[in-house]
Image (cartoon, rainbow, N blue to C red; front, side, top):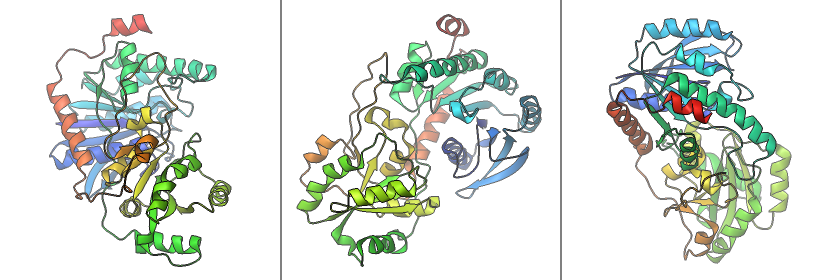
Length: 403
């Protein structure tokens, strides 16, 4: 099977959907399928570029089209490049802000339809539109209405045979519009790596913050990976974990690592505010190898995403796939206009109430380095494509009425 993936950007380490696309394509190539990828709106490029991107020793043919290039020229370059690959499937990895800085890429459906060359489409919705939450502002709902119209136009024009999303609230939102989507779970963009994340990375930071060397066994390391949502409350997380940590005579350490959105002054405020209760480390932006090593050193993961949206959190998936229990303290986002079923945390996904009932501190489980998540998702995607019939998932007439 030959699959052409389309996304916004393919700048390694700078675009989550691009990293997802590259890793999924690499796994499919390891399964003897042929894959290629097109970045249709790459803000990291100034011109059209053809290259080979290597991920986990697998080479992926890539066409990167600059966001500065007029769309008609991008389409000409993309069609010519695709003719040389003759894909059996076109796969759209959709996030609205990936194709326009304001998430308003008017005409996207027309552009995408011109690329297909007769191949059927699969669409993966990583995100939908603004204004989905019960507490969404009027501005977000109006903005989201424009984005929703663009989504519906894309689906009407592409008529995808397979539609996926990774989160139940998104599946329900699509269902409200008559669009039947299946869940394709998210996997980690951080491959398992070998190495000592304590001696090599965290021990010097802990010693500097604590004013001297600390024994690893005396610490309880809780990590926050990537972007920190503004609604997340570090003090609440500390209040939840600290009683059990103190019961077992462990010093609590918060480890912020990866590409986050916290300026130096925010980290300084956290250090000052939590001085008597927890050490705060800023490990900074790191390579995926170093992130994996840090994850394998931690005892606990702290999610900053709300519980109902946790399925779409790449950082949470990365922590879980590395064997970490994950504490989710937020439950402040709920889908507007529908009632998703309760999110039932598993044994490694904990609410504050569940954490408070524990008799011992949860710690990381050892996991094999096989990166099971991406393998399972690749297998599920292939099964979906293989079983797809000639009947379109989205009926243009239905979409036209509901839009």
